[in-house]
Image (tube, rainbow, N blue to C red; front, top):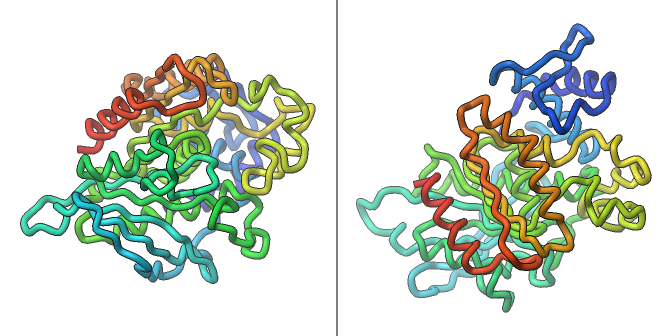
Amino acid sequence: MEWATANVSAAESFASAFGPLPRTNLLWFATPGGAVDRVKNPADWQKRRMQILAAMQQVMGRMPGNEKRCALDPRVIEEIDCGDYVRRFLDYASEPGARVPAYLLIPKTAFAKNIPKLPAILALHQTHAAGQKVVVGLGNSPDDEYGVELVKRGFVVLAPPYALLANYQPDIRALGWQSGTLKSVWDNMRGIDLLSSLPFVRTNKGFGAIGHSLGGHNGVFTAAFDERLRVIVSSCGLDSFLDYHGGDAIHWRPERGWCQLRYMPELTNYSGRLREIPFDFPEIVATLAPRACLISAPLGDTNFRSTSVDEIAKSAWPVFGLYGASAQLEVRHPNCGHLFPANEREHAFQFLEENLR
């Protein structure tokens, strides 16, 4: 979580001086000497990666440091015996003056003696009136119940809410946040802190994140900032800003599309000049290298275009290749609409198991 905040100002100055570096060829970075140089190895890539994170913060707001860290103080509000697992409704302090309501699913095997610690997952929900309830089986949305499916496979699952949806309405402006996107990333990162504190959770191989739609990009954004997430599954979660709904300007007005307060309202300033947005998803996906990333982009998705996802992956693969990890980025195209169907979820679960167990 303590990524190199001391270097953010320098990275931001490079981003301001050069504007967006090439997005279809990510193997370039800005140098302190005022030039642009080719990425030749992972150490060079880390310089470009820092510049990408700085560019994201130009729009999302500055990632806080220790000033927003506080004791988690988790409180269990309700515990339900669900047969093979226990479902706890709890809340935790993600920052001073703000608590996050979440569900924690725990396999009953976690409480047995002499059992190895279990891998843990963030299960992130889509845009739904039931919020985080959908992933734990309380939203009458079978395709979104991947939290339940994963706990039954032996994972500890934390299902946090997304800011300004359903039962979670923090006053993000009063709390000092520029965007709901970064507030939710922070809450997720503190959720990983919570999972790390549990005596039955294994931490030495990192954590996973899985999400559909809103949850799909929420997980990718979180993983960009928190490298404890070693496996990321995104269903119907992204395409290039340039391709979002064909670039139609109506989607870049205040409180529309990506410009809503719960996302990144600063993006309103780029309406009509989307190429000037300081970052885009080719860069974000590349920041995940060399970790395992699975993207499901259905052919019939009318929200996020599958052809755009192919271009994103094409740009990011060379970065994974720097680490000899090209196979760690996988893209699938199920023949359906904006859905996370059973066969895709099954593949995602196997992907998580292979990379976390």
